[in-house]
Amino acid sequence: MDAAAATAVRSDSKKARIYEGSKDPKRAAFYEKISQRDLAPLWEVLKGLVSKEPKVICDPAIWRFDEVKSLVIEGGGLLTAQEAERRVLVLENPALRGQSKITNSLFAGLQLILPGEIAGAHRHTASAIRLILDGEGAYTQVDGEKTIMKYGDFVLTPNWTAHDHGNESKVPMIWLDVLDMPTVNFFGTSFSEHLDDTVQNTARVDNDSLWRFGSGVLPDGTDTSSIQSPVINYAYERVRPILDRMKKTGEPDKHHGYRLRYANPFNGGWSLPTMGANLSLLPANFKSEAYRSTDGTIFVCLEGKGATKIGNETLEWGPRDVFVAPTWAPYSHAVKGGEAVLFSISDRPAQEALGIWRELN
Ligand code: 1HN
Image (cartoon, rainbow, N blue to C red; front, side):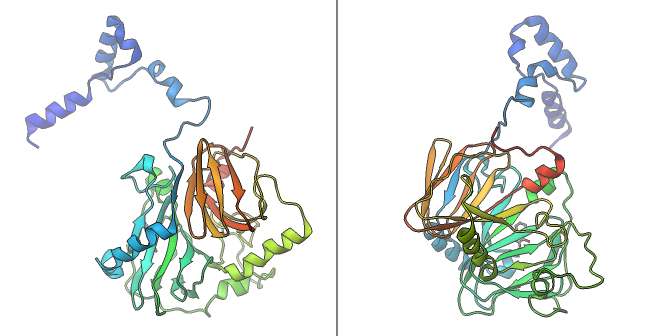
């Protein structure tokens, strides 16, 4: 851009916006004058800034696995996992296209890793979770610990942990990635680096963290101050039976059915400070009462079928479908036929830490 064009752009950016009150010529002139000093009248925008209720740009949306799987696989023929660094199709909220967001604070995508492929080691300030949806037998390594992943496993790569993936199985693997990247970027705190070794040396026994910290004991000398869980794979085969036990001994919650939280075994809190995940068993023909909260929530069906009414929209779901309920939108689930299992994840821990999380009211 030449100097004259740059000046024109700059002077244009100093033009007062057209506000409601600009109809009054005196006010309009005032707004124009203060705009030259990078000032603007709060009274023209206050109502939009401090709204009575949350006003978010985010739509209810669903990605049906059977419809998108072939597209994920097709992407696998275009470039290798190594070329892509991470071969992921981003789940873009229809109201937030081009921003790599599924909600205002979270990223989600479907990652494909083909047999024999490697996604090299790196680390970043954004924390990630993976929920395994298709295939079985690929591994993730996190800070020197390897875990082989299976359907429904909930895998963590907390902030700044080194992680790489590889598929030594005979079938393609697809999983859902959710990252707090939009939150990290909102604060302008994104850092990342590639590690020298594409594949980390694993210094620990496979699944060491689940054995060590997922059995109700803490080895002597454990530093329990971490705000992120030390467990890197909450294996579905260990977690799923707990829902059956809850069902045998209690009544379902009217909003969430039988629901558990993926916890940090050090303090009972959420498994990550920025993202909180749950697993719900909704009994056969269960209909939940409408619920809403300020954490826009990503749901994934792991078993069964149903429909969720979000605001005025009803989304029908089945196994491996991913759908999203925006901040403060009332939603209710209706199970169709036999019982269903829903995984969910949101930014609730971050909101709770800031004292701004609300539900219902
Ligand atoms: C990432 O590092 C992974 O490690 C997946 O598998 C998805 C999306 C955005 C930024 C980094 C991974 C990602 C990502």
